[in-house]
Length: 358
Ligand SMILES: NC(=O)c1ccc[n+]([C@@H]2O[C@H](COP(=O)([O-])OP(=O)(O)OC[C@H]3O[C@@H](n4cnc5c(N)ncnc54)[C@H](O)[C@@H]3O)[C@@H](O)[C@H]2O)c1
Image 1 (tube, protein in one colour):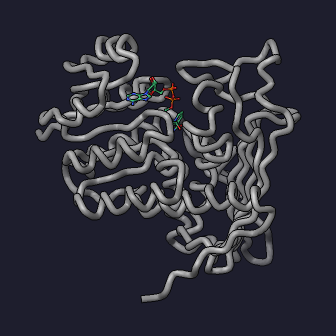
Image 2 (cartoon, rainbow, N blue to C red; image 1 turned 90 degrees about the horizontal axis):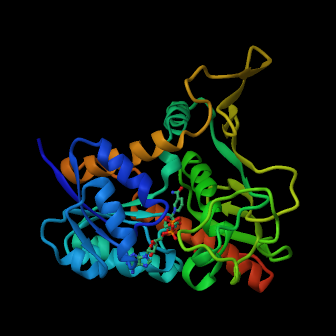
């Protein structure tokens, strides 16, 4: 049986989920870990049986035993690490977002082209069982032409602090951190249409609300609430070249009654909700049908989603199976995210040049 030797760069919160999934994949061998924080890397190495620990990721990339890497660092380091990794001959699974600027996204795309290595973007929700199930219905034409989608990811108290709240290292707040998941989910299910224009607003009205007591939330490995230079909420309308549109709103903090995640798509033959739980709406014999698919998990299962994501990456690396979330998709999503920030800053809609048909 072929084996893939894995290096993980960045040993903070999300790395555990990668390690856990690699450990459960018989063809993956967790071999090396790199983190600036040596103790943290050593603890993970002990826990998951990695042989090598590096504080400088360049040394991990220079290790010829490493075949493939997961990049799980702060967002602003994704681009340099991914580009170095590709040029070092490694296949790469990079956590979302692909990077923090459109310029860097194109540089990564160029590096993928030049090196011919595999790059998978960590759009984990694509790998959810319900997403793949719904995609089958979509691909069979059950919803007709999908012309509208709506995505929302509202945290009333959920600024993870640390680097997440530092725009220089994160590239932004809830939009680039959690909005990316629901935007990508809808966009993927809409058939990945080319973005035509973006109009967005970001707000920083509430700050991080670190004063609030009695409610717990996700925190960066090096949590601190001192610095906060990211937006606390964003909304946007995205128009696509095929005439479809997507509406989004996301927040780290908002005076909302509860946290909420929704992703809905609407076509001319039917509609569907993928979040908060799988649901289908259709019409037959002049009758509207509300259909509740009978599945084990009606909503996104984090562990299964990550396992599928890691399994798909290992399979692409070892057997060349097509990448479900390739670099081109990462670039298009970066267009949307950076377009929303630019639109908000300039107070106007941002247009993208149409892609010439070839
Ligand atoms: N897919 C998801 O659902 C999901 C959830 C959480 C985070 N993420 C993504 O995962 C990434 C990491 O997030 P996190 O929550 O684990 O953050 P974290 O702060 O818990 O961990 C980040 C780690 O990266 C390390 N690091 C920073 N610079 C480094 C370098 N040059 N070399 C090696 N290590 C370095 C830090 O020391 C830290 O241990 C981010 O890109 C984030 O967007 C994805």
